[in-house]
Image 1 (tube, rainbow, N blue to C red):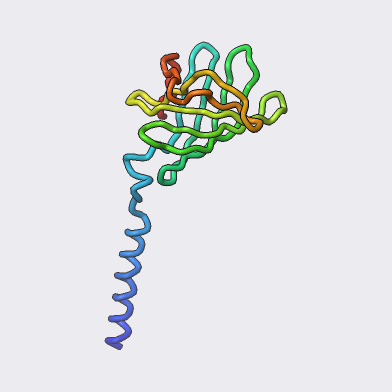
Image 2 (cartoon, rainbow, N blue to C red):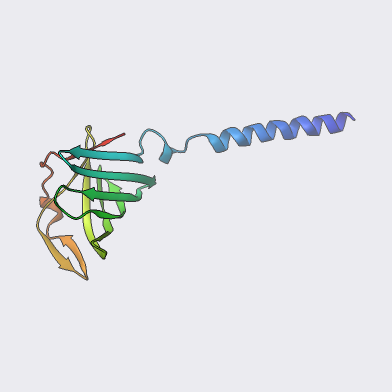
Amino acid sequence: MRIVFKGFFYMLGLGCCLTVACNSASPEEGKDTIAGEYLFQSEGDTINMALQQKKDSVFGDLNYAFSGKDRNVGRINGVLRDSVITGEYSFVSEGIPSVRQVVFKLTEQGLIEGYGEIEESNGKMVFSDLENLSFDHGMILKKK
């Protein structure tokens, strides 16, 4: 009978340790993650992004709704390096699928999309020069 109780308490202790270990936040889910919901809204314009992160990979939904323009609904898939997300945005606008390169800079205020000269490459719109993007348009996606 003593052996059964020792085994029971051993298994109970092991189960508690595993539960705590599995429920602990991993480094990718801790403070340093950029995962979450981001939003920009102003005078009928909206940018909404829901990001997930696994190590340096980021992915999620990205939607644009600008007043007087067609709505873009799609997904972002990119890489986070040095506080900058560089990725591809696959979206549908007016029923037509498209892919374009996107770059977002992480600041204390939130995420700011980069803009610059673009060109077509292999059926995708990409930036001509990633080093000379502008991040000064004021549309900051703030984390909810």
